[in-house]
Image (cartoon, rainbow, N blue to C red; front, top):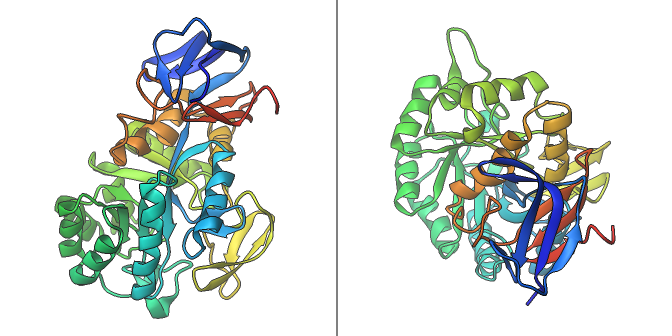
Length: 381
C-alpha cells in the first residue's frame, strides 16, 4: 500500500473548476477527502494538478506495437505512455488477417483483465478502401456482423471500441451488434455521405474516429460525414492534436461546434511515440518516421502519430489557447465517460483512483501518479 500523501499548493483542476492553492489527498490507491495524520506533504506550489490522461486510441509506443507485439513489449509501450501522463490506455489494433486479430485480441484481453490496459479498440479491417490511410488494402473487408462478432468474442469482454466504415454492406447491422454487446461503434476510415452517417448514428454509433482524417472533406452541397458527426449531440469526436494531423483552425472548428463535452483527445500513436525516428512496422505496413512524423514508406500516407498526451495537452493550452478546464475534459473526463469508467477515473474526486498529472507553469509534465504510486516523481525529476 502506497503511503498517504497530500499534494499541496497547486492549481487543482476539479469538475467544478480550478482551485488555486488547492490540495489533493491521496490515501493508498485512491483520492480521499480527509488526510490521515501521518500523511506526507508534497509541496507542488506553482504547479497544476490535473487528472491522469485517458487515451481511447493508441497503437503503441516506446518501440513497441500494441497491434502485434508480445505481452512484454506491450507492457513496455504502456509504461512509456504512463511516463507521459496517460494513466489509462486502450490498446488499438490495426487491419490484419482475421484469425491473427482474434488471437492477438485474446492476449490483449489478458492484459486488460490484469488492469494493464483498459481494453481493446479494433481499427480495421472493416473500413473503406477509399479512405484506408495506413491500412493494408488487401486485408480490408466489408463489416460482416458474423466476423465482427468473432472479434468481439475473441476479446473476452474486453472489446471497448470498433471503427467501421458504416456505409459498407453490413455496416449498420454491425453497428447494432456492437451496441448490443456494449462495444462503442465508431465511424471512421469512411467514404460515407452525410445521409449515410446520420443512419449510422441513428443505429447507435457514438464516436468519430480521428475526425477530419480518413474521411471526405466538408462540401457545400455534399456536407459529408464530418458535418453529421459534429452536429449530433450523441457523438464524441476524437482529435489528434499534434500539429500534423489537424490545422489549428480545424481543431477550433470542432470545439466550437461539438463543445468541450464532446471532444476526446487521442494520440493514435504508433511504436515510435516516446522512442524516436526510424523505420517501424504498423501491422504489416512499413513506416518511416522523420522529424517525429510517421508516414508509410510506400505511398507516403500519414501512419498514426508519435504523439504523447502531455504534448497534446500543452499544445491545446499554449498554441490553441483552449481553457485548461476544456482540455482536461477532452483528455480525461470525456474518454473516461465513454469507456464507462468515470466512476473510477477521469476527475480528481474522493473515492476515485489516485491517477493524476503534475504540470509546471509552462504546462510541461513534471509528475505522474497512478493509483497512488509515482510513475514520475515530481520531487526527483
